Length: 224
Image (cartoon, rainbow, N blue to C red; front, side, top):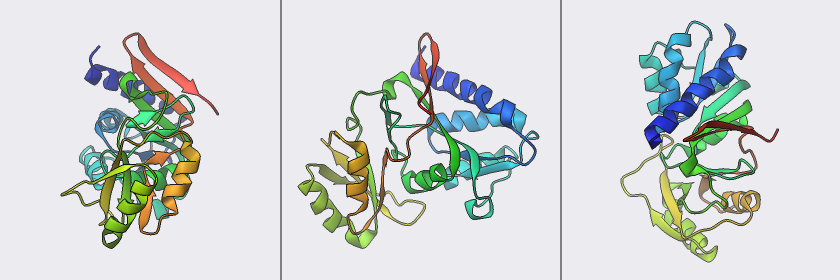
């Protein structure tokens, strides 16, 4: 199986994971990215079985609406039974690096409101230590240079992601050569830098379930 086929397999598995729990008033949390898009596409046949979705990006919202799935503002919904999203990296503790698509802040907010976070990923995303994938940090534009200097002091090689403006109107700095020994502690340290909106470490609130695609099928890993 190639990577696209693995992504399709985990998207199918995620549908199987949530379908028994869908009710007429269910509002799902939906992530952003190529794997999340495959999951969104598979929701179309089920659209009459649940109420709608909260999207973590404008792109995902448009994709949902194009399929006839109603998109709600998070403030009008509150708690979500499920949040389904991919990851750029995920470790054995189901801690993740996310934000390659620059939607990390909204993804983190929606994840915080979900009772269950289902991460869908192919085996290339499964790592023993986070940091191989550049860690995104969303910053207030006027603070970009200041934040970059603080990231250098922490041992990262910060690179401004030129031409990218987040859905929140902010900018992204990607941290290269930045292997992370303690994801929970580093997440807090980065978020404490003045001018940082949030960073792409999903460690304090990691996934509850990982659906990991490999050539033999899809492994279901649950820690809680």
